[in-house]
Image (cartoon, rainbow, N blue to C red):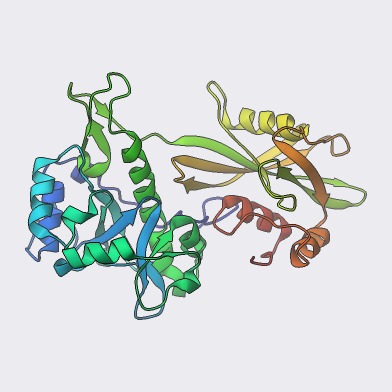
Length: 367
């Protein structure tokens, strides 16, 4: 079911239950570890009939492999690949360098088949068997999913993201992983930056199964999400509807995309759309519509997609600082320019690509 005009976006999966009342319990991770060990957990604390999935994360990469069906998914670490005693001590002592977190609930088919996901995000060496640690340490980073053959490889979440929004039945496994991996990478990025209390400089430790940190004074610190708007601009003139795309100074000359910017203090989302478009391209907005959103955990953003209609299409111009060039395209012109390599648009991992393709009405060539 789609709740926005844009439909499903990359990294937005299907999870509805976050179980915050369970993950906040001090003993929740202990129950999940014992379930990994094959023990029957307390049903009041463990509402799943299946055993947990344990995955390994390194930076913004996930250790992945091809499953029996040939699909690329996170490698599910087996009991013999884990240092069970270290995991038990780890979740009991909750050290400041804690690196086992609850990522969420994996739902591939129905809630009856859901499984909790645990991610090892920090000190892999102590929590894995020697053989598994060596495998992770030596794993090659895959530049594309085609590079993954018979051995596990480290895959950046951006590389995996295009698979995580396809609503076709055969791709439901990758889609189910979308928000799980988005949350995991966002939490990992946050933990790497939140080891110390910004107010006092004192070390903090992980609590609530990885979803908060605690200062020595007992103050809880939670992950931040930074909202940003990303907008596709169109206008009708000279008898045809056109899309406005911009080339940023920081990109190569031929890359064009939609317009984006972070929400500032005291702004509504609509204010931000108007401000960013006017600052970057001199666009005055006469209409806008919310299109959809996308978690973007690099390191902690939420992208809020809009479409806007320019009231002054003949007066727009690049700011010359952030945006080097802007161009109007008809649908045919954009398809042709992408097909012959004249320009490139954002990769399929981005909501920007979804906004552009939604306006065009069909997929654009994959680079």
